[in-house]
Image 1 (tube, one colour):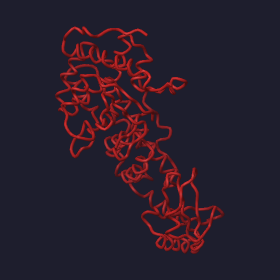
Image 2 (cartoon, rainbow, N blue to C red):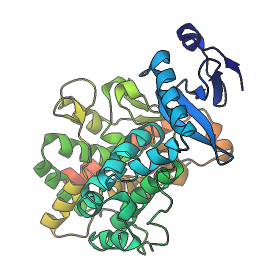
Image 3 (cartoon, helix red, strand yellow):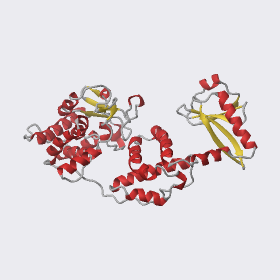
Image 4 (cartoon, one colour):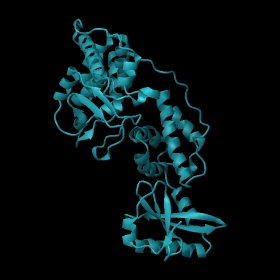
Length: 392
């Protein structure tokens, strides 16, 4: 590992590499700057303790200047000379906090690493905080986790919450804050694979009931049914991504636009049929199509579906079931599973995954227009005269 007398100019010119690396300071013993492949740099004070190296995190280079980093490293090395283990003491202090504080710290990490961080954060806030939030992290036991699980009615939601909480504890262990994950060996609830698809008679009832959710959420739900795209991607639809009738979704996140990326990380391009475009014309503004408050994405709409099912007195349905209904309509009209997978952006792998995604443009248009015409004929109670089956 390189070693030299660090300077502010040197730090500004320091370039990231394919793997993380350290540059030691030749002026202050134990001080090093760690450079990540992303370009992020942080100060570390590394010292031996009982024959093993200890890493003490000082802070980000962007927040702490070189002179201050040297002073802080000198304090750490002074404590080491007194026989103390500053890194261990810092970890012990961090583990004294509550679960709510731990979850807040984890959230900053998750935003950079996990595309589904918002969904997990919602689960934590809604189900975990009421049970675990005020408990000291070090005191949370497996029985506390089980008690949380029993309070969540939906088995699948309980399992998702368990996974979200476990991810926080696993991160804390990797950060040397904890030694044990209390979620380990807690049994998940058995789940039946959902196959819910709206029937032809249910589609017009749901369509009309959507309006009770207000204009933004109602239009978002209708858009899922008309396009078959993932609910999380629909609620983050942006006007910048709609070009010449096509909704073009970047596979990777676009932080400046708060676009989370597609679920599989694969860029996707879907044709918007006339009924979908007509819905978009009813909404004004820029940025997020389905915006609320100060231009933020509408967020969760699953609760709305629960209320609608209760009002209609029908089997529970979710926004994802609207997507499944669209996919079933594609195959039901004779277009085949290949067309469904292509339009719904399912990762298939193999040679199909490297095909030019524009190659099926005309066929995709026909599929989307025909499915939309079928759905609207059910909504309006009219014969679908322009709905035709399509064979390859």
